[in-house]
Image (cartoon, rainbow, N blue to C red):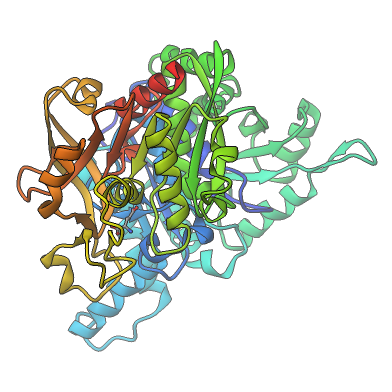
Length: 535
Ligand code: GLN
């Protein structure tokens, strides 16, 4: 570490949302990490929910769960997949959490009769949260991504906190602003005016951007870069082009070519250290772009209209595909549209079937129908969380002949509650942050497919659910050929089920997708893709 002080990079966005601040932040972090710096990334979300745990996936996509059980924004998934280091609760802060903390302190009387205000109390709390990572992680650089778009009312306290930090003699920081340079087909021109306005808008809040990253569909020439630099008070070497690419995994390579990491280090007065090769990363990208063949995996879920709802599963399939030199063509199948009549027509083209996590009744019978098809037709099957619970229900109904079998999430009065609520969960009434969340140990049976895939007997995986396999049924299931092959050593909860006489039928109560990264693809996903390829 060249300097003992943690330095900060803030990433803001302008012109429009969805420009990929998360991917730019993660790519920059990757390059700095490859140069030998210890880096982490944080996301500040301007909504009033305390965390995204209570949000419907249609709102903001998947809820990503960290080792310490925090329910967080999906961008943290990108951070972990790129950096291969775990994040925590401190890496995601929402306006709701900030206000909750400040209001609780006010109730305790901590402000000693003072009027509690946005400035300084809310902004102080934002700054405290930003600097929390410096204390916990011993990082050289913290990259903080500010959600939303500059000019949004919700983002103002965050931008104000950045302004204050820029003037704080104790803090070394820079601001990267990401904007869009649209192309007008009619005149054949790239337009920089929205960028100029957006930089000015940031300046109105007292923040001068230090680096500009321009998202574009067409190449931005030096003349345009010089023009942007001139109008936006930025040195022309700090105007970086970010052209659209085929896969998000190409962005670090692109940013290296554009020297984003070098500009950032120069502005932070840090040495460049070693030139990053990012060789394994390049190999991974080359595998995705040159697969030996393509296999089709059906992803059965009910939120498929918004693909971000299953982003970690989708990325884990890509990682596992690359590990097998294969491309994975994900067929998104709406669980509500599946029934006995159409199931064979829809699923017969697939090499493997993955039944996704979820909550509530909608689409659940379609998921159970998909499981039955996979079991009977010996198609490789991977059930995750609710997907595993559906596999258990299907087996109970159609193999054990317990026709009323169900999860008590759907039918509290079922005669055969094969999936149920454990006593501890019954007392809970609050919805936010009260599930079985975060990392739990699991011990695997030798001889199981899971054991072979992991290559070890003790694993740890992340959870996000309330309901559990009902251990009263374990023996009946075993006799009929579905085995509980992994369980939690402390509480005895069943974590993995497998069917014996099947090429690959694995249901997991946890979420393996959260732990799959570019350099460490998840063993179960890798094995599932391998089995699907054999089919
Ligand atoms: N709804 C189920 C439960 O709470 C499954 C949750 C999930 O799939 N993440 O147990």
